[in-house]
Amino acid sequence: MEYNTTRGSLIISEYGRNVQEMIRFICEQPDREKRNRMSNTLVNILASMHPDMRDQGDVKHKLWDHIHVMSDFQLDVDSPYPIPPRPQDAPKPLKVNYTQEDIKLRPYGKYMQRIIEKATDFEEGAEKDALVKTIANGLKKMYLNWNRDSVNDELIHEHLGLLSAGRLKLHEDDKLHSTVDILKANSQVPKQSQSTQQQQHRRKFNPKKDNNNNGRHRRKF
Image (cartoon, rainbow, N blue to C red):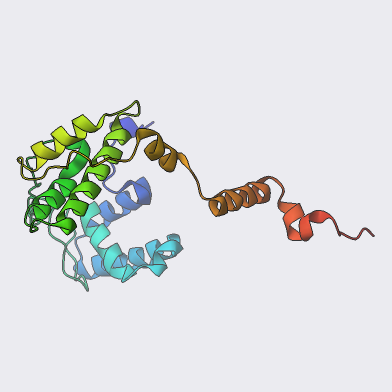
């Protein structure tokens, strides 16, 4: 008795061992015309065995490629398609260079750092003061996403100066949003969203009631 552990490994396991043995048998045939006929017949059999592949592009092209791969590129036939390259001969993908940016404070991310850099180019005035205050409130909100306990405004002042290299500063009388208000705004869900969630919950657990006015006017026969 022959066990799978003693056999060669399957190259494409989806087709099974019998198909791979058929391809090996075709490769051993000395007559080229016979190999051509057998290969075409095998491709048609594989197409009928996998009807789900019909929705794909050129099914026959893909099957011919798979036959060459399963034969370890030893199949010498008149293929209607070019023989696919061996894995070792295929061009290697280009290396993707990851952007390693120097982020001074990672809880705020690189985009907030870029916003702060743009804000430093604004001319002094009311518009820049409003922008700096908005940025500071954004920093406080982002900080609370990492630390849910609390944060004082002095720490946000310090971080704003660090990220802007001391070029952006808040006025002494500028008051940032309170921690309680920020956490409350983050935890609130709009009433419309709540009602939508409740309706979805009812439909999930009471599908029959939603189909006919919640089941209150269903006629019995």
